[in-house]
Image 1 (cartoon, rainbow, N blue to C red):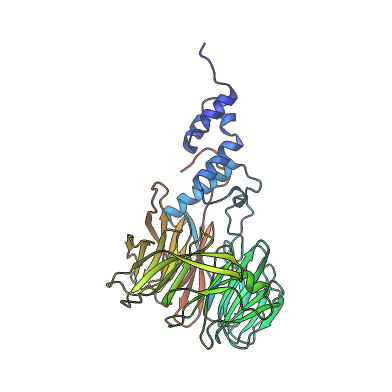
Image 2 (image 1 turned 180 degrees about the vertical axis):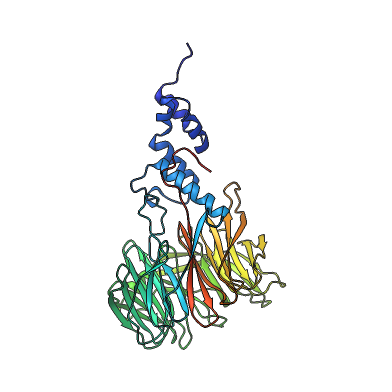
Amino acid sequence: MEPRLGLHELLHVFSFLEARDLLCAAQVDKVWNEVSRTKELWRQLCLRRWSSCKASQMTLGTQTWKQYYLCRAELEFRMECGRPEKDFICKAIAGHEGGIDELAYVSDSRCRFDGQEKSVVCTVSSDSTVRAWDVQEGAEIWSSPVQPAALVNLVTFPRLQLVVTVDKLGLIKVWKAENGQESASFSLPAHSSALQACDRPEGPFLLVASAEGMLYALTVPHLRLLSRTGVFPGSPTSLLCSPDCQWVFASTQDSDLGPKVFCTRSLLAPVEEEPPVSTTCPSWRISRACWAPDETARLMVMHRNHDSGQLAITTYELEAKQSQEGVDVVVQQIASFLLPDTMTPPHLMKARDSQVILLVSGLELVLFTVQGLQLAAFRDHQKPITALWVDESRVLTASFDLSLRVYVWSKENPLPVLKSCYHLLGGSHRWASGFTHVESDSVSIVGVEARNIGTSILRSYCFNIQRGSDDCVN
């Protein structure tokens, strides 16, 4: 009689198998089937396949680790294939009587497949309302009363289920995401040029830049003023908060005024008669910037080269150092390169991680390393690209050609390789002028489709998942 492996030995052997092999092993006999279902085996498979996520970021709900793995693997397969009806359902969602100026998800972006997942987006419009939409159902959840002025921007705090809007006169309001109830307001002396939602563990806050060049830090949800700082007097200011909410980058486009980096702690707890802790970034005539999502303080800046005036991208690392006089901000250059002379100046810029930058130049999507090596260039649209969305799994572009393009990062390659997959089509060119925005969560994609008559609708694409499947993986 052949010797049989004990349960511990079998578990050790199974720990080296991939998901497909584990599913095959489960077919051998009752003992192998039982061992192949071990929680820790599937937990480790999840963490290996989605290495950028921590176990705490994976919402199981009532599922096992095995069910979570199979559902998420199936979702990735469907998002990569993009077959209409089979892989996703498309819905047109109308309601606003004006153009949609901004949208954002207010639902949790984490993957969950226990039947409790629900995608909710909020929008603001020139019709002076903010609205919430159920993406899967394709229906409006609530609409605010008509406001005194057109709403021009919004940000969301998904963990707190809050929506923050600002109108063209500078009136900021907080709304409860579940029912649209207004809970707080704050009035700026001039209209807002930028909003940044910052949800850090120590407490959330809101950063607002005004057209007069002032930077405001406000508490959330009560909108109590914490500090007011002059940044670029008389110039509209752009804001970018770092992933860990410890830094904020402030700039004014194509100006000789150097961009500034503030330590947010000094904005939230200002010392009387002392300016906030900040430094001027050593770049000239800034046009675009972004933070590396996987680093706490890595900043990529597009600017004009001092010597040639040619567009360049420089990567910096930031650090706060304690000195006898207080806190000093140290900016260290990590890498820099010139963009090709033949390239149309990019109008969109995002980082995939600390090493890869994505640029949109007209109709083209181009990938560079921070050292300047061009990794890829895609020309999948017939008209200019209007929006870019990036995460560790995929890339989305929106265009005036009335399509969204889906790209997927390859998991087989050690270096980032982006694969162009398929178009998501909008409505008829007879009625629509193109997509202006695109956003996504773990199970859906939403674009803003502008109509020729000056209004906008949402077009959602919700991906199908066969819950309960426990014996296959794509």
